[in-house]
Image (cartoon, rainbow, N blue to C red):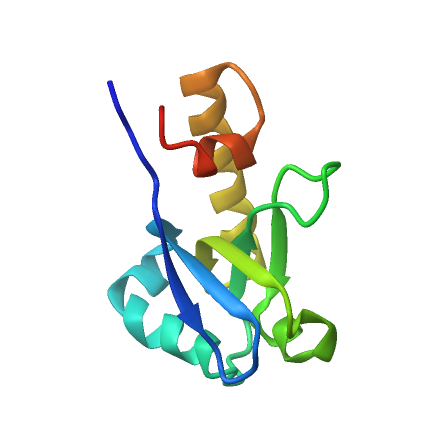
Length: 122
């Protein structure tokens, strides 16, 4: 069975790039108005409580959770941010991480989330 997860690239107002998974994991509140929330992230609008689940920033992490406002800082300006989940609260973001990790482990027997999301030969 071939299962590919693709990403859609979107430029923000700075020079960093938000790369959205086309199979974005979302909590119930985000799911209702996902385009609104994605645009808010891309435009760096302040939405308290909005969290992004991203591919890990280093090899020691499985996934990263960031408040949306974190990407206002200049050191993110030249980074590609691979977003695989969007949640309205930190608790919902943690639940998304649990769901993602368990799904990847069930399908692959490993916790290599990055390989799962970037490997088109699944």
